[in-house]
Image (cartoon, rainbow, N blue to C red):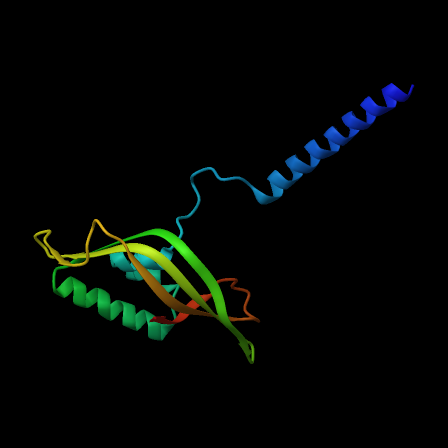
Length: 158
């Protein structure tokens, strides 16, 4: 009877483990390859996608990004940006100002940034070698808003 009890315990624990795995999978999901791409800001800026940037940026930052996109378009230049890897992402400051929450993050990445002229020649950057870039991005959100999205309210490089 003792031997049967051990097998029963193993089978019971296996069933519980299988149930927990299936439950976690249904809650957390799994990668299918159809997830939204990361780094929406960088891609939209490089592509000159003002409509895509509008919902992600504060009015002030949107104006700065729009000016840079317009200057690039006037010069008939294109920007290619590829983030190869994130080396570090830290929250360096967080504060609550009334009902507005602000979080500043430090992002260290290796990326390739190349500006090309209309004829394809390189104006700035190197398509073969990455650079280490440190950016500080500040996001804000009204804590009483039903909109769960944060907007980018400030950027700087360091």
